[in-house]
Image (cartoon, rainbow, N blue to C red; front, side):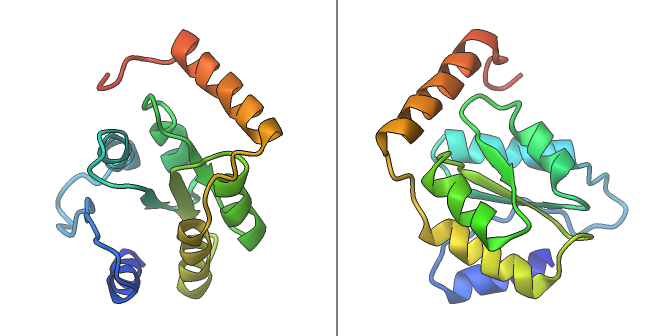
Amino acid sequence: MRRRVIEHLRAGGHEVVDLGIDDPDSADDYPDRAAECGHAVVRGHAELGVLLCGSGAGASIAANKIRGVRAAVCHDSFSARQSREDDDANVICLGERVIGTGLALELIDRFLASSFTGAERHQRRLDKVLALEATFGAPEGD
């Protein structure tokens, strides 16, 4: 699925930073990929991130440990759009064992085409999330 996502994004004119591993003998643990993706986003090397794992849940949990990352598991069109528009998500996490490639591409497109609305109630909620992160989040890079 990763290769198909990369092809799709490049065909859509997106610059892709591929942080995946193709060597079957290498350890490919989702926390490592999630950390690399999250750091790429918060350090400005990528505008948004796409993480693939079996369910999407583990990648989301790991990515959300990086200060500044707001990773959302999305397996439907509404969540893919809403997570950007209302929650200002900057990483989408998809479960390869949950959805097929066609739906994954649709959700990625929806995620990328959406942006934070900045509506008062959503900004108020985001500010509260950011305050939680500032108070209780681990320092970047840990």
